[in-house]
Length: 345
Length: 116
Ligand code: SF4
Ligand code: SF4
Image 1 (tube, rainbow over the protein chains, first blue to last red):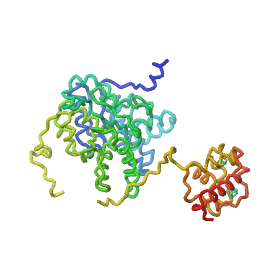
Image 2: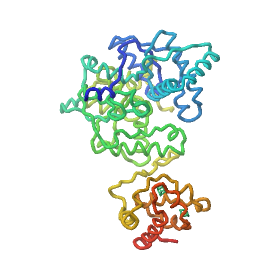
Image 3: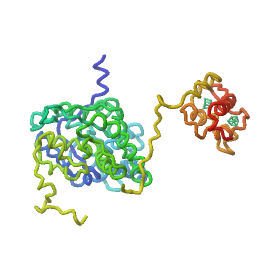
Image 4: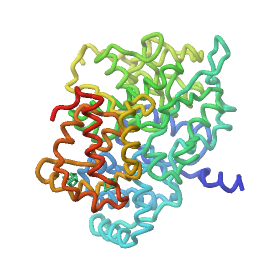
């Protein structure tokens, strides 16, 4: 009986042949993460993953900001599916949590309203001459990392452990609302016990903190942030989380959503500037990582290849705790081989 | 401190362990039907005073239940005690009696709030 019940909280994750959709906002917020994911899945795990150059937006930001109508969203997502079908894939892997929620919303709509599916097929055909198949699986990249967490552990050079004390690091895992709360059945552990990040952290030696506002929104909330007058609501939500986690002294925060990483990272700086408050003992702020960055670091990738220099809260104290080596001089080394000078910015 | 063009909004979360609940407890003793309210708002939707001055029985009931008393006396003064809401309430709550009891409680125990 128990086993059957727990089945509701499980999810089938395909073990190979992924069609990857890059995210609009992640490529500017934390651009190293997606390349790192491709490297982990392709080079470390040896799986087949397609990084298609022709992909485009899912309309998520515009849709949730009420500027893109649902018919348009469905047609644009249908085009994404048509590109996948063209390449012969069945497993769609959207990098962004908002895309993940929206793709599920569209596919679920088509299940209940076949006339919407037909209309979308007609729109896409008229506009582009294309046809599409609905993916067999819509899988978030964090599901894939979670699935292979044991295999990855065997290849890891570091653990989420304080190298000096040997104690596990204390980790806040934050799950994006559009991952776990829109369609809880599409998620490992559902909305009640989302296990995807906690499973990685615990497998790799860390200790997950269970603090009161653990499942509270990060504060992005789309319209809260997009309209400047509303940003006070956005930052108030993030502050509520920071205040709730502060007494548990987290060593870092890990998230699976672009908005969450962005706002939990940047709002710490903003709160410091507005109120002079930081949420760690040293006054540096709590470092915030994407799950790809966390995985890449433990595998021994160069922190600057992961894009950690683009974080507002400096990650170096965390690297020192784990004992991950890094070259300070190379932090802002550009592709051209020259050090990027920020004086003009 | 920097100005980014917006402020950090204050939290509106209520801690039910620390709110002022004594007046509401007294209200329930005086008019036990108050406990049955399911906050459906049928009373407010029917209210004639609402058309004129925005009165809302449900809102007043919630304010007292949550211990938010600052504007309650002023809000209560907007009711004209016609009793129409009593007739539509699906839980047969004596709304008119509750309004009178709330007014009395506000006057008796917290005169600073009473500004009719
Ligand atoms: S109609 Fe009755 S149950 Fe509904 S909110 Fe008013 S008093 Fe409460
Ligand atoms: S008694 Fe007061 S609240 Fe009820 S309908 Fe009349 S004016 Fe409105």
